[in-house]
Length: 475
Image (tube, rainbow, N blue to C red; front, side, top):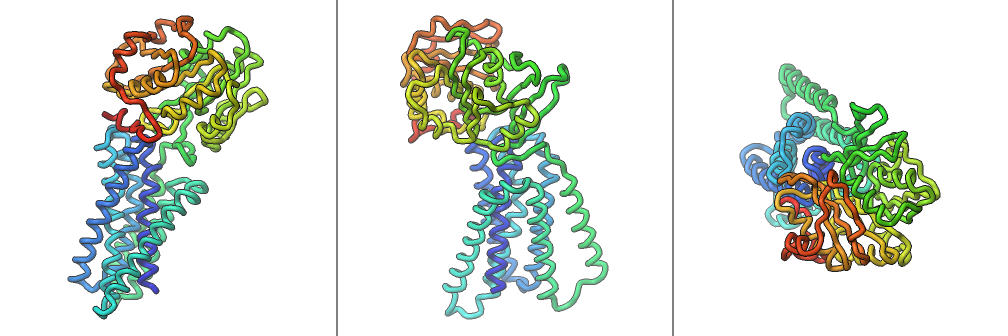
């Protein structure tokens, strides 16, 4: 029974660390398909190396002498991952190679060391060759069960209840305590006082360093690392950062003031519908800058905001002067589901502001969701969406092709200054002509017609069956 428990717990610990890695890396490299691909691949490599090394060691050294130190080392290395991330995270870039490097530095060794426990336990259990299948199969099942518990327990329970770093500290402590118990259980001789003192000092020093390694996040929600900074030039200004991106600029007492260029373009797009009240659906809330702007500048307007992150809404209410009302309704649901449930032709404008750098919810980019947006727009209504892209702008091209597939008229508002790096592109779509869309030259350049067609080129329409958004951005 003890063998099953050891394999179950070490496998669970590896998967807990793997799930937590996504949140711990987010402030430095963002959250994308590439992030999770890099993490999963690196941890799988660590598991392969660890099981191979553990099997070789078990053939040379009595596994009873190895199991305790292995768990202790795994716990200490789990602790070490926190200061390593704090130290190295701000220095890496944002590409796939940076994700793999950062994951390897922080999590390769703890995953490899903990994975070494399984072949050690198997060596102890394989006393009868006639039972090899049952032993190996049983231990494999225990390891898989532990991995499942670690995955579901972390994703569905732990991350909703606790910040990531205390979870890592607790995992490390559990492994150190369990490893110490195994060491004493299987030891033929007790460690010397000097050895025990050195080990205790190492444990205390590592745990203390890990506990004091500060997170860059003020809050950790189920979806984001959240930080709110004070604008150094304006005591009334607040800047919301989600993961590795400055997402919103909010003025607490003057919501009509807009600092980010793309939000000013949103306002100019809304101006094509006159100056009266509007019915607007917002895909994503963030800092709620634009809903608050419309509420302040267009009295009587109805704003429905679909923001999936409940905790982010609470933070905005507490620190960004968000005040939900009958005219500013916040629904903590996925925006696509809210669009499907909405009636036909009820919104004058649909605003897309859920795409942040590499953190793009691909299911909000496709032809199918654009068709839903077109359905809920009133005749002549407008869909305006902010897209962040870089380099060759493959994502912008594909998103424009998708809008052209569904709407009669499409425009792209390019940055006023050409850039080869990340930039905001505002895409506008309507079944009514966009000649009345006037953009301040300081905020961007409107591209339509033949120039737009040339820019889009042969870009492929994004669909639910094919939407490689992360790869388009990173290419």
